[in-house]
Length: 137
Image 1 (cartoon, rainbow, N blue to C red):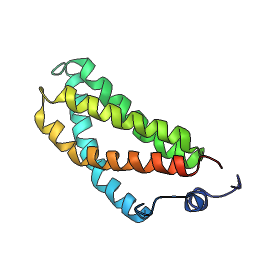
Image 2 (image 1 turned 45 degrees about the vertical axis):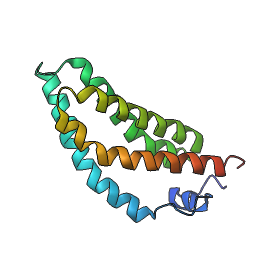
Image 3 (image 1 turned 120 degrees about the horizontal axis):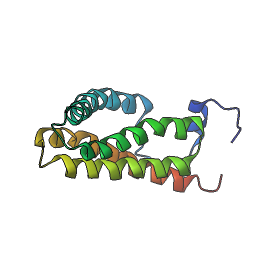
Image 4 (image 1 turned 180 degrees about the horizontal axis):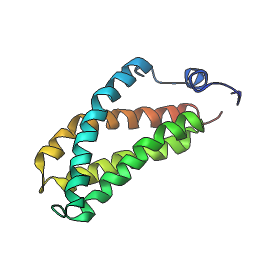
């Protein structure tokens, strides 16, 4: 693929599974998830800063946020499927870690991560398939 392609030209040129959601659908999902993430993650960071939650609780939340925000830069900016696949696996793993960590302390935060977890699980499988399907090029 040409290196001068826009990110959408590059993405559209990739081999993708037939069940790949349309970009507009993906955007809508994130428009729903980001406010949930902002409220719940913000609450955890705020409580940790006040000393009302152990500081270590913020670690998986911070790592998840960093990996989540890195994904578009890696995937669409660098146009690197392998690094994007590694990044999404980190997003998924830190999401599991943060749910397990926060469950005994604030179950409502853990429960509100369920839609995020479901979407990231789908997105992880999708990215791994895209990476596999485009491994030669």
